Image (cartoon, rainbow, N blue to C red; front, side, top):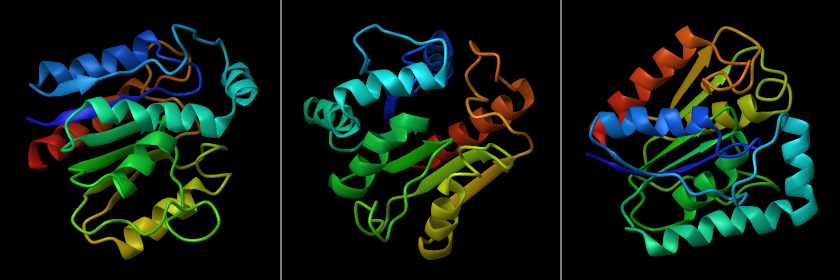
Length: 193
């Protein structure tokens, strides 16, 4: 059994994010799903990003990071898209991390946007679609490849398609086959950590 801190994407804590967390719970894992938007959800990525921008990307990321203070240190940190920001920061900087699950986004581990190098012994899976204009088109896939090339055991899974939120069953971008494969890979990962 693993304990997971799962951060939602820019459209908020949608029913699809909750359903994904419930699937992990059904497999016996403890999953925390904090709501960084205080109950708000948004009909589009752009509207969610506008809300985040109004508060401040760093402020919301740090709100997520602070939530970990009330939980066990031995967590798997997971995030969907925008949620990767607090998840990846915690996985890289909080001692005793058991792993990281990064969905649709990835930050580099070197250069200007990095939180620093990837910590030894912290396994990571990264999932995204190969033609997603955000994941593949904005450099996230390059950051993911950097991690896979330099971190022992790191895994990058690419799915055919061009959707960003493909594992969120409550959104039109949902791809049931890709989501099922992603979930199976995540459950195998959680059973190992």
